[in-house]
Length: 342
Image 1 (cartoon, rainbow, N blue to C red):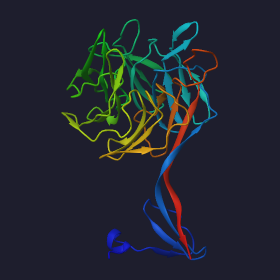
Image 2: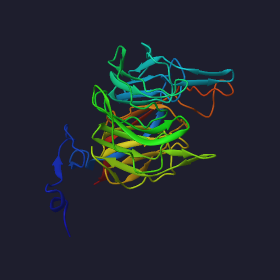
Image 3: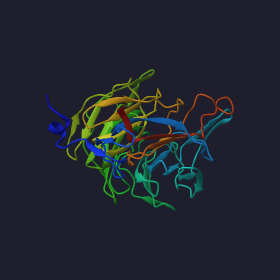
């Protein structure tokens, strides 16, 4: 029978105190407390933050790097009296949302990219009708950049940074498209279309325009059909990967370390959280609130956690209001676990 040392190439250390520089997967025995312990990766949980946005909204652009960093911009608020497209921006520091400078082109249902709250890109969206406009965020101001080659609504976003991003599929007038455009920091170029039929609100994450994971999404024909398909982009072609494990959904919140490590949460139509390990999806703990079409970290790192803000929630301050101001926080990562005592 193989021992721990045979498998991992090391032994279980016999220590007088817990190590100060623990590594994930490390095991040790504390001789003082007489407890065997391990530093193991655990499935995170969602909690409701006390931080609320100043302007409730859904279908906004967003980005962030951790549970203490982010921004959300544009979107739409629906009220009993009608609807209002947003041009406002808010930044997040982990404890509060602060109003910042507006975007230049008021819109909703845009795509977005960014790995922090101080460097982001928004593109496309609905501006009565659709727009190709693109803008770049530097942490203080939004600056207009060259637009998409084709105007589109609800493109899949969240993939890449403010200098290297993808706009995936979406709606062009009455037609829907699987067309993909790539941003290199100065211009958009039409690239290889996604292979599937799902074209609306495609979920996606990744760090650049040459490394992205696109999954889920929807089409509409008398009602929405949601998908579980998953594709990996390597800069030249799309490869089919294992599908998501929960019922199909679209427009989810996302965050990632890479296309080999990320999480997806919420969206339409459920509260599910799923964890991607580069090969397959695993179900995680669900959101506390059925919060759809909210803003999230995007392609910001997921090792320190994630946030999901705004969107549509099941209970509102007035009938018909769909501009939720709430924020949910997901904390996960390595944790010291007691394995047994002597």
